[in-house]
Image 1: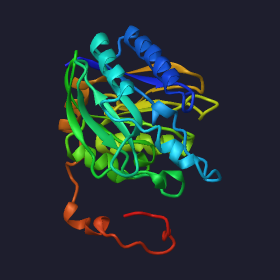
Image 2: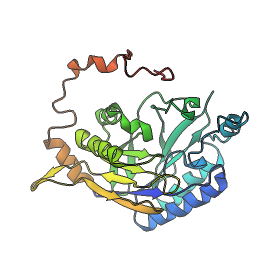
Image 3: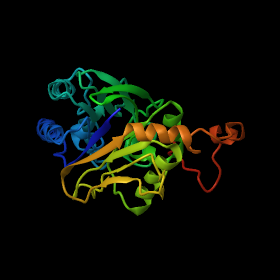
Image 4: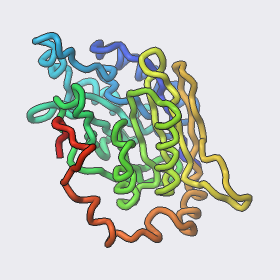
Length: 294
């Protein structure tokens, strides 16, 4: 199998102007294709630029909810047609219309224009306005047909990556690459945390963030291969600065697969029979939070 190339679409958005966000997203997708991308990855909740409601305004929450779209709406179908035209997969993010409160979702559209999976953020930020979202219920892995061959792809969104269980479950379900839309400051601790997710699960990780001044950019991709015949290696494939741009990350899937078959991390030497406490719903001090949802 060849090298799968993921384009990190690091942009700023135009808030609730979905027509402008659509046009800008298309422009960046076309630039990604020109660079040879197999997959284009948007930052979190692109259709409204990760704009949340203003709690101080009584009507703001309903205005925000009205921005939610479904998979048959024009914003999504436009990018389905674009993926087919460009022969390139697109990981499109949006505030998804749902029964009850909306969801924070990413739909992976394959190069034939079909949605192969939709993932909704499980770890919603319940300490802020994201408490108004419906959390996702599971992590999904799909087989994505690329020009380089088939690859098993999963997704997590922003706050999900701060919990090791998210990437772990995706690895256990067979993910080789994990796509991660983001919308927050990426500083040294979060970047180090994300690098560790790739290392401990032997998966390739790609994350797209918003450019400055909306966030601070630093979209990043980490390889699964931490050691080769010469010893330890830097797994960082690409790390953007703060500016807008299309940043390409290439994942050598043959090399990743050989590494996963011989090395010791991932699921090789785990002892799940000792991990029962991880599934407990109990929360003890100092971690009790009245707004947390289980």
